[in-house]
Image 1: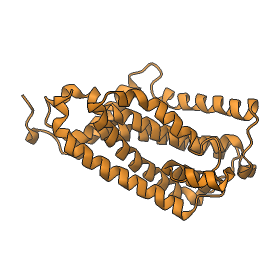
Image 2: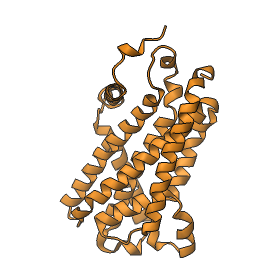
Image 3: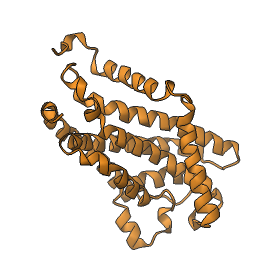
Image 4: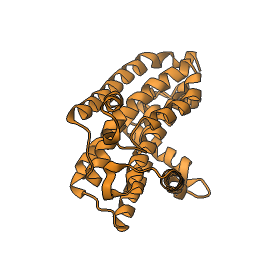
Length: 264
């Protein structure tokens, strides 16, 4: 028997309570606790920096005095937030299938919880990275912080929209979650994390500029490190992609949600 909706908290209160529960279950109950949420990405950053800077001697001419490690860190952490949010949002409905028939709750909350929780923890990591870079002598342009926040908001909106799409598809076609790691890896490689958009040929830049993450990450990093940034047209397209993903994903999810239990 389903719980009556009148006995449930408001969607906002329910969302906040579930985010807190997700946070506790994911980090507080582990042996290393919250520490691993920072150590994991930090170790990955060190590995990438060693491989690309020391072994492969990668040089990005457009970064100038900024240095490769700050350049890489400020691209990698926003990507962690985005990819982790999308990956966990994709499996949200399937992994919470037992709740669907027992509790009368908005289904979209189940997708928003892992997306917002993932973004929150990686944003704490990004703040720690920025503080560490400043403490070690990296010259950061603090006036660009509003631009940084706007780019992070755009990435959050994009991740929510994509999570709605993929969570819906994953209910009807479980191969979606199996294929997602490869798709996210490919997306990461065509996003300016290990390279700068200004270093691409005009033809290649024109092609990859349709990737919304290129605009957001290039603009975020360009603002903090005072590097060449994407054009206003690229940023406008990135914002439009985010809004399109959010509204279309929300529409598809809402239309499909009443049929989820038939396929779980």
